[in-house]
Image (cartoon, rainbow, N blue to C red):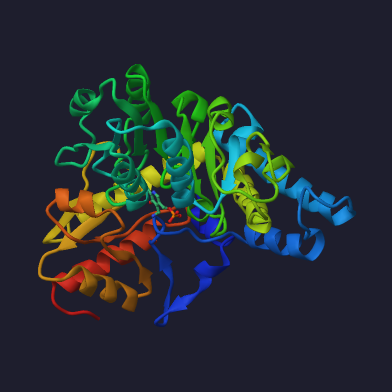
Length: 408
Ligand code: PMP
């Protein structure tokens, strides 16, 4: 059993009181996006009611309030990731934008024809497409770490891919399609030993486990606010300060320059260097509130509870006749991808929706790993700390009913 009270947590999330098709909503699409606690929603409203202004520019009271709120949010992110300096935290639109930023600034500047980038077979398209495009443009080689049948990275195969031409290893800490937790610290260490930099995609990990970028020793780390109970349209690029300041800016505009003439431009250092234009101030502040919220509960407590719930769900799903779990690594988080014999994944998704249960069906923007598992799509329930054993019981009972041939 677990002493964690998810029912109490649920009360903080207004949307979880919704009804869908006459049934209480059961939100099991947390790998796609997470719901927002009242504390986050209220914080964003408070910003627009009491603090709204552009930042850094005007010398008036509201500009000072907005700037303070925005920079306080940056500091919360710094502490959340245990980054060494607040200057290492760059606000972007999300994980996708963060990876594209690194590809188009650091990658564009530092990689030359013949250089190699390594990704893993587990990656989300957001951590494939920017590198493939860069590789095609510059004549780089994109190499892929294979996984075993359970969906875990093969470290021996990885070590064979590393060579003096390897310049970057970019990989996910938790797979969004299978839930695999990769041995991130070891992967980074091996990249560094080969003289390469490492980017860790934390889109699925930050809501599940305590992340420490200094312990990981990642050169870059990215995540999206909306997957950690914060708003959409805000995310974070962490980068080591010396690397960021040696990297050419990405977009140009206001906010990122020290001095502009028509002859010469002098840029700010990070983070402003990479924050051209007016950013998503209110949602950065909302992300800060989300970080406060999970920090108050404790990331270790959240991780332990989600692990308990994952084991509970795995045990019950395995007893559904004809259900094949996809992704069976020993070290897993949040995600329960499966197929159900006799039904298409869409049919399963629709039957669950009929009962108020939200899951994702499809390729989860991770086609290469599903194809590695011999599939095009799966049904994917994914857990968060506001889910209960009762949510899982309802999911499993609908699947049993489907298998026994009557839907209601
Ligand atoms: N990486 C992983 C592992 C993800 O799960 C996702 C979102 N599904 C992303 C990157 C992209 O995140 P976003 O769409 O928020 O930019």
